[in-house]
Every structure is written in C-alpha cells, then in structure tokens.
Picture 1 (spheres, rainbow, N blue to C red):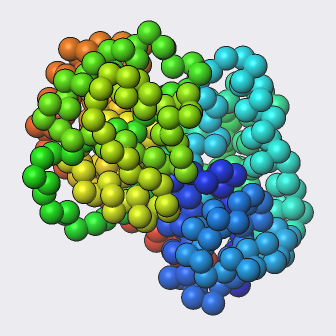
Picture 2 (cartoon, helix red, strand yellow):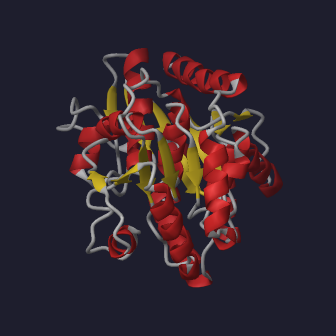
Length: 354
C-alpha cells in the first residue's frame, strides 16, 4: 500500500512536524509494510523527523496519482491568520499553491482521502473558500480539531455527512512525569509577529522579571535558532536588556523538545503547539497568542481565562493570571481523550479498507 501524507511541512516547525509524525506512526501501526510519501515536503531534515529516519531515501519516490490512500494531516493551514490585507493575500496565494492546486490528481484518479486534525477558517477569499469546500466535500471523512472549525465548514457550504468535531492530534502524546526541579523552571516560548502590539512588550518583560524571582527562566525554541539574539521576532533581546538570567532549550527534533517540555514546571507561550504539548504533559500554560486559533484550544480544554489577548495585557494581569494558572490543576477532559482515540481508530479503519 502506498499512502500519501500531506500537511504544513514546508518549514521545519515543531508543531507541524509532530502532527505529521504522529500520523506516520499510525500508518505504520496499521500496515508496517506501507510506503509513505510526502509529495511536497521541502526540507529533507523535516522528512527525516516525520518518517523516523526510516524512509528518507524514498519519501518522493511515488506521485500523488500512484497512492492507494491519501491523508491530509493536522494543522491550521485551512484558516487564515488575523493580519493585514496584503499579508492575507500572500497567505491566500501560498495556501492555494501548497494545498489546493494539485487536488485534481486525487479526484481524477479517484484516490480515497481523509482530512484529519485540521483547523478551518476564517477564509475571506471566496475563490479559495470554494476550492477548499470542494476538497472537504469529496473526502471520505473529515476530523476537525474544534467546534469553530466545524461551524466554519458548515457555514461555508460543506455538505459532507462524514465531518466530525474531534481535537488536536498532539493531545495523544503522553510522557511519565519528570523528576521535580530544585528551583521551579518556567519555559518561555515567545516569538513576536509583525502585528503583535509592540507597546505591550514592556509589560510582558516586567512580568517575566518579577516571575524570575521564583522561577529559573528557560527560553524555548521550537525552530532552529528561533530565540537567537540576532532575530527581531522574539523576546530574547528584551530579556537580556532587563538583566533577566536565562538559559535556552535548543530545537533538535520534536521528540527531544517534548522531553525538555516535560521537565518544565510551567510554560508561557505565544504559539499553539508548545501550549498543547504543555497541556498534554499536564503543565500549567499561560498563553499570549499570536494567532486566534489558540483561543479555540484553551476554550476547548476549559482553560480559556489563561489565554490572554496581547492587546489586553498588563503586568499585574499577567502576574494574577499566572498565579491562578499554576495553582489550578491541569486535568485532561475525558471527552477530548476519547475524541483523540476516535481519530486514531478512524484512520486505522480507513487504511484497512485499502
């Protein structure tokens, strides 16, 4: 069996790589002899990490048209970011080229395909929206990761009866509890997008300085060199200028980063999947998100008050929210655990029918 696996694998990024690796492992569990291709992956190193270094000589050996089954993996690539109009147009064009323009190969060759663990919406461009709905309507089944995505699909005209509201695939990750630290350790993972309100950065830095009195600060990289001092889009230089002591967790691969996250006592992050893994590992997470998709996740797990809009923050608010966050037990909702297991079961059934 030849299985095509596609997702947001165009940059070496922790969350997107992890989601693809989870699905790859499911495919191999269902059929150890399956050949898995990543038809449009742009980085050999990313392919190595997705495929557990097992098939990296042949991940482009076959074409989409030769697949027996095809899976669109998790990620938020069917929903645009909240940003300026020019950047939205760039996102629309990039999304169309990466995820849509080649779909006729699936439809013409009648290749069964599934879409699992994705976030959907908003999609303001009507042309792209129409193309995406066509893709979703022809899928064998669709698992979206939250209620908002489900509602966007229905409002955009998706009539596929096999659309299910599930959850993010990263919630299937589990680890044994790590040994406690002598002094508590706070992981800070904070990239800053161009639209992030710059006037709020001093309040965040002041919050971190106060918090560093009780926590050791570790800056978390979920991409190679993400928190480098040479890069503008992170908080490192502000921390250094304010004489806050810190060390860094460098990015090597998803599994190594998961092990490092498991050693932390708490996390502050601006991105989604470091927060999701924190929750999966039962770590208290305070989110100041770059993207609106983060609000959906924290609402879903019942910790919405610990996801704070950047334009609303001030030092005292962050101190209060963090104090409540670390003193509120992280409990895995049973329904989300069951939904994650359901996705895995549906993928197995889908592959067994080949």
